[in-house]
Image (cartoon, rainbow, N blue to C red; front, top):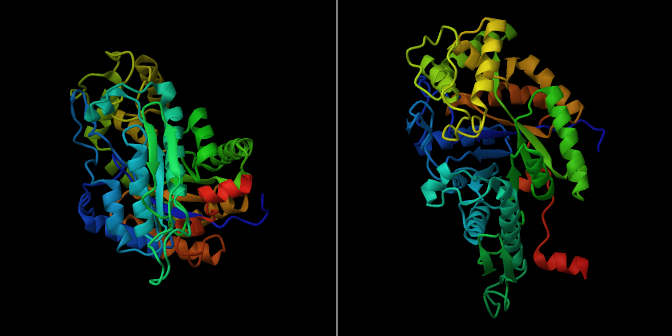
Length: 456
């Protein structure tokens, strides 16, 4: 590992389904109109952000058997959005969250390669898996994938995609009008593979982009997910953003990456984080309190605990204590997302009641406490001090920033924090190149022919 301080990079995470985006603020823009995406992406590019990262929701969330109307949801398809953004940006990476369970691998590889070519080598794939029957019902495949199989299936899909991307010879396409043909004979190697759900025999339809193929992001945090990232991904997106937690996570990921036969710094680490800035630390703390109260409305707080209790709690005061009655269910479901899925309801309720009693928290205060563990809060100088520590000790490679307001949530970060970090020498002053791999410091992957030649 290098002893020089890390140059931190930023990405922006435009979430797929969430309650942390304050859609009710007068300054909030549409969550669907292209203008919101354009403004956020162009602001991020002005701040030399490496990537614009889109989340994905494959089904509208439900709550107590009804569509959940409090969360932000229902955004357009990620690849469609990013293709449009490619035309109004020139350097920032374009990261599409795409599911390995509900996509044909050859078709998905072609669509991602198309975005990569059209953007000049700026595309990335955030690899996610899904196995629950509730999501599967939207695809008429409910429950067909066992939980234990999700990463095995995902790795097969990724390997097929990589094979498709590497199958087309780099020098196959004519570079002059005087060439006898548009391409060399048989420009694509044949791809054969199987996922357990797909049997594949295919030819690539596209040449590789300037960066080789899309950058691979992954966010699984289980031991299986971490090993999967260590074997296959270029970037891991984590929830471990506090310094000590992030340091422990980084050590584990780097050890797993080495064990997978890769250099320890081959897998870049980008924890998700929220930034709340103000002119002073005191003002930032007050602003953070306001943000949390806007994110967790009284209705949101009740809906949050209803997911554990499994019943309507609208008769309870959100500014009062937690219910003394026990949940009516044994475990929580998946209809409100992975954060709730499979929790032991009674044990969770007892833990929350103990925390509330120990700290004197109302229902709403408890939910704020549970949902606001991440975030840099302070003046520009104070936050820059914290980030400088991350850079000096090589804890992360950057941060994926979740703005609490769209589309203006990056303005103070780009206008104030980025110049401060540049002055301290821990943030880029220009893009390293035109491709996402260049701007993340990643190597270009070899083509299939290059791999064959290396092993011959």
